[in-house]
Length: 298
Image 1 (tube, one colour):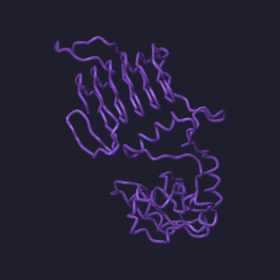
Image 2 (cartoon, rainbow, N blue to C red):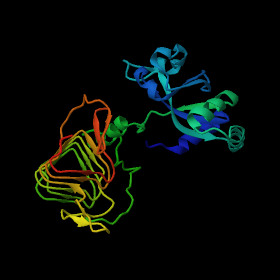
Image 3 (cartoon, rainbow, N blue to C red):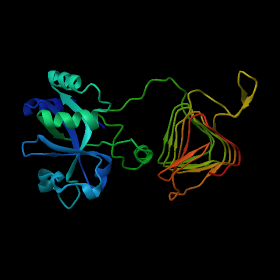
């Protein structure tokens, strides 16, 4: 998210409350993945429920102010906590001392504070995405490669900068790339890359197709030659081998994908755990440092 915290601080000071929580409007079907709160007309929190079942979501959590502003059903009428808070220091210290055996702020300390103290709500209408699940992480990253991303990286007044790594520019030899992001230090000789995010130092062999996938890259530069470890055992090269097809997948850092590996699109796949990969929400996940042998079909 991109938020002007000066505006948030002003909202908190003007409310004269003990604390302020940032929240955003969400639709009913999205409430099951958030902490949902209700507020009174003055904007103070009155009730809170963590990731409610839709059948148990009380009508009292429909926000009357949002409902009055709603137009053509384009805005949700439930308030979800974003997990961003401002506290008066003495109140925060007191709350933490009283609840020093709690493990989670959002599900334990915040509900208690909302009952004990005056808790103001500040509604945020800008871009904010939760990446707490594989599906959310996948969709949020691929959205940056779309024609109209909800979050503009190149905003003139508040650009987003990467960490300076002083890597060489990406080298693209013979590949059609469409709606994708290519990280520095990459060496790509593939065939087609479509709506994908290619991370730092990624090596992609010849005749490779990548569609709607996230390749996290590598922690070090690598080429197509095989190497040996300290014990003399031969290791496969890090990166994507030649003649591969990768669709709807996430490949974590330093993974080695052998030649002719195929991960075809299959969004209806059930969750599973395999020694070499996992499936979550129809997305194949290759873990960090994994080695996928040549010719494998996942």
